[in-house]
Image (tube, rainbow, N blue to C red; front, side, top):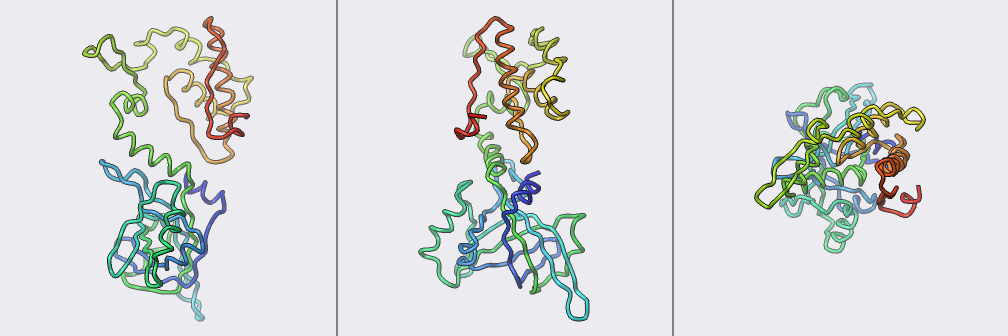
Length: 281
């Protein structure tokens, strides 16, 4: 989904005559000068890690191709996920780990002390099923590489997963398992499922699960999102551009307000958004 979103944005960078060092495990790497990355404003970073391992499969994507020679031989193409980015200085490699959203700023800060010999090494892994057979191990030149950076929202999702591991059990269980805590005293905390039968919330059971949404102009996946959000205390709705997330959220806010009115409360809903335009929608 994140890869499709990056291609949809069309914000790619083309690199020509690139030399790739292939390894025997469908992996490889190539080096580009720091100045070239700055000129192309390439958003490069290593994949985000957490205590349990990796929080994402890749930090970006590559479309790699090798034109055929004059005899018509040697044509090759493949797709790959970026799994690492390091700064190579005097045979020493340093992981590129800027804050999410600050990849370009990190390169700009490096520009002042970057020498002409400094390189950025990009490591990747070929995707099975969408690539030709990996070339034999060794160094080969002449590749054309199209680079796609992961968009900010999907990078933030990966970073949020790492921060989730540092949160309290209350937050982790609410987000990951759809559960919430009840507390009558500091020592009397217990974990309850939000299952309707255990909550005893008849309105949720009879109305939310079977609510008629035909008049709300929602497609099948949007209806599922709305029903889940109405039934659960915490929901995350995400998807690529153009799938109707903002429209779904706006209708969901209206349904929350109607629910409050039906319950005898004020029809007030707190709706937060990262920008004024999004809030106006």
